[in-house]
Picture 1: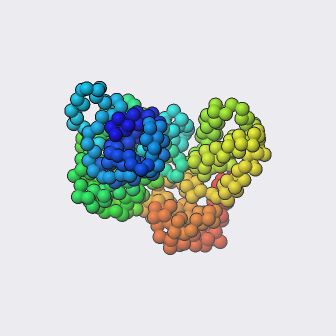
Picture 2: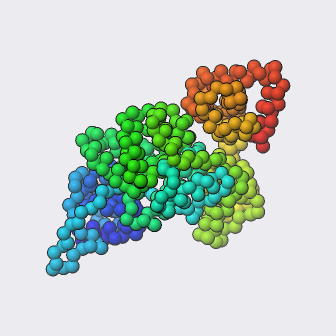
Picture 3: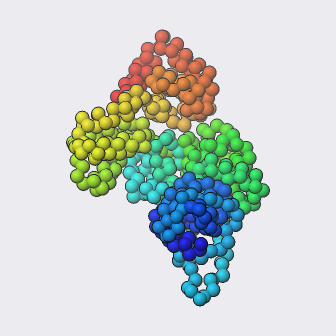
Amino acid sequence: MDRIWGQACAELEQSVGPNNYNHWIKPLRLTAIDEGAARFVSPTRFISDWVNRHFAKDIMAVLTRNGATVERLRFDVGSPAPRATAQAAAPAGQAPEAPTTRAPRTDLGAPLDPRYTFTNFVVGKPNELAHAAARRVAEGGPVGFNPLFLYGGVGLGKTHLMHAIAQDYQARHPSAQVLYLSAEQFMYRFVQALRESSIMDFKGMFRNVNMLMVDDVQFIAGKDSTQEEFFHTFNALVDQGKQIVISADRAPAEIKGLEERIKSRLSCGLIVDLHPTTYELRLGILQSKTEVFCAQQPDLEIGAGVLEFLAHRITTNVRVLEGALQRLFAHASLLRREITLEVAQECLADILRTNDRKINIDDIQRKVAEHFNIRLADMMGPKRARNVARPRQIAMYLSKQLTSRSLPEIGRRFGGRDHTTIMHGVRKIEELLVEDSAMVEDIAVLKRMLEA
């Protein structure tokens, strides 16, 4: 079994990448192959479940190529015994080397996406500070801020930068241990450790890394026990001078249900807002992606004005923009058609209609904040001063008028406010529109800017 698995591991490391291999496949030990089932010992149920979901096909294909017919995988949870790998197998007639003591593993995080690198991250004014800070953290060494806290709406590049930091840092520091995972995974691992009475193993793993990266930290809000452990983990790493990188959909102070002591700790580092994309940034992203597509399929042709049209019409987020471009290229490739403006309008009709219908609440908040010269954070914050409260109510009113969002949904986007607060704000503006000509003019100007 060791010989078969050793040969398979050499191929798997190439096919799934060194990071995925080290995190997920290397901890496994093949113990038997019987009646089409390959049986493995895995150190935890979490690893076996993840491997079964994401790498089962790769493993079965490689084992079959190495002479073992495998149709399914089976896992037992335990402590895998030391095994020889393809790289360290002992020559015939010699005893295998004695196992060496291994450093604490950091293989319970999420796999990194090799597509998310600094090289293919398009930089523009809305994200230039976040990009610069991420680059600095990836270099390693004293940074001057800890943690780095990235926040912004969906599809603005937070996760891309997180993956880029991790991969660049590991390339520069191969022996360093980087643990990247979502807040939900952190919570899952903590609860699992409590159930299995292995909390000390959990603490040892999370507090012996060189860099801890937690995505979407807002999901631990309201989870008291998880927040307690996160707080102590955070403090332990900072005290050791280890770097922490956090992302969320809003600033620490605006995450409802997050303990004040955690908000305070998170606010001690560098907090960077990734703003919604501008037309120029969207066009740059499309041009970058088009170069990649055209390099892969040089016979495809894209007509003049198509990219500019997409950058102007699809403004929700970068994921929707990239998905639209990918669909357009697939359509043109399969039907062997040139990508003209007419083809784009036909192929992407549903996406274009959706974008025509929707105005983003983030854009409403930003335009109103700019118009009244207040901080964007005040839209979600608790301030009740008239110069802040009135613009906030205007943004609530426009969100109700120009989007299809419900009052509870709008409330969540305004710092977790109750729907009755939103209703009060909307009614107040409706009353003022009857008697205040300046309010009428402000609303008209804002609508023109938002609908332009």
